[in-house]
Length: 337
Image (cartoon, rainbow, N blue to C red):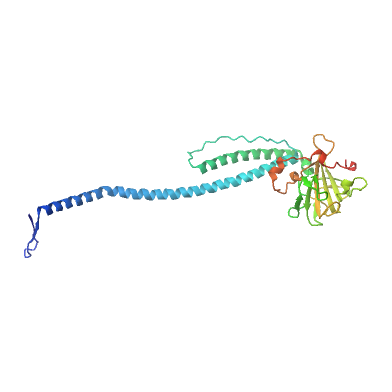
């Protein structure tokens, strides 16, 4: 048995006595030890707990920052994709200009120069963005080189640039393409035939323009007794553009130019009509090119020569055949040769 006495500071107050058995003393000692160990452990682990809280906060901040970086990277990838599409459009347009002017084309792919990133890239989107950037840089350099070549060619061949057919004969927004160049089902015979030009539907009376500088070699209607097939064109105008091209404008309502007159690109030569073999008001527009020493000008797809209008399937059109098969078009009447 243990006796514990508490003596107050004031001697007038009584002394307090507490009695503790041996078992109670052992439990008290054990409690004191446990409390002491707990306090010591708490003091020792407190810095670690604080460090853990700080690490959790830093991890949350880095996660948020990483998310922002990924969003920015995604926007960069999207921007590069837009630039890639624009570059492809520019490539197609420059290829088209090369075809129209008859300049030599380099069909080889531009050589890509490997570029080492200035830092280690781990994220897939970052790799993709870097690769796209390198490709765009290479393609842009090739485009600039081709643009310089075309500019130099145009400067040296100014007459060709003025005479080659290169605009749409009807103002953009005033027509609908109803029958393209190539194989089709004839609206009159319901059989397959080759359409050697474009049919551009427009309101009757819509102005029709010359598509390049040249001289009018026919204006009127072909006599039925001389050439039934060309008679079907109704009122027509034929313009010779230098030594390489002829353009044909058919089914006109009115003709405002005479044979033998010189015309300028963009000059009005007539209006859209419904004359000849025609189911509704429209312009039939043809371009015939004299190439490779041939004696007969061959129809080419006019869309290739129309530089002021973007056609659906533009790239595929440039890759497709550029000339009409020789048996599938009507030769020029003798008076136009």
